[in-house]
Length: 113
Length: 112
Image 1: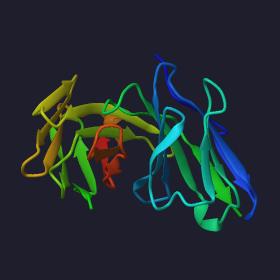
Image 2 (image 1 turned 90 degrees about the horizontal axis):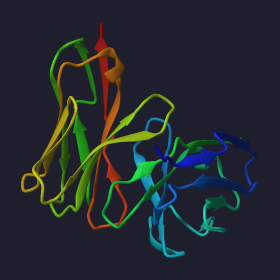
Image 3 (image 1 turned 60 degrees about the horizontal axis):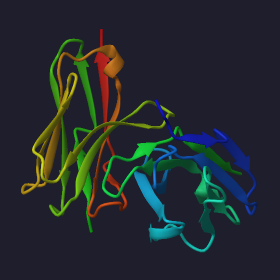
Image 4 (image 1 turned 180 degrees about the vertical axis):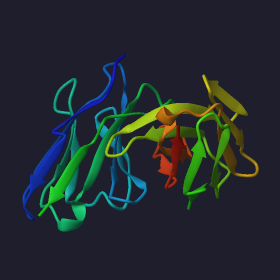
């Protein structure tokens, strides 16, 4: 069964460093999303992406964040200058169409020291 | 602003019991409601999606109902098993293709 994959599974970085989290959505899906979950808290929406542009973003997704679909398969989230409070599990999700079921990847645990 | 609440926060039951998990949302103008399962330190597995025009969805031992007007959904798990132990999350979106807004989840423990 097709699934969303994410790499790396765990990333440790120092405050102020740039990180890129990678996702490979399900191949025939057209809508892509990033969410995050700080330990013990709710899953929070960051950004959605369709047709090579951002369709919606939350107030968390400030200028330090960017997303890109550099080729036909990868979808990336970049954090330019990480802060301690960026430590969280980051989930990528995809859906085949607008309003259809979102499928989540296993997540990347980001630890900022 | 849409808020999603799940009660109870935690639930412990013996194997074989039928149980109900509750989800409520403040804005009834939802497009979809989706139930997920999350194992500790893992990703989210989609269990059921209910469109706003639907009343319920079933998958195996799981049945989810939706009462949009009252802002409530329930997830019914029949004949619970230890393997059902996980956190169950409810999420809604207000428009097609937009953000899912999550509740904090109900952590279920099924003892053998």
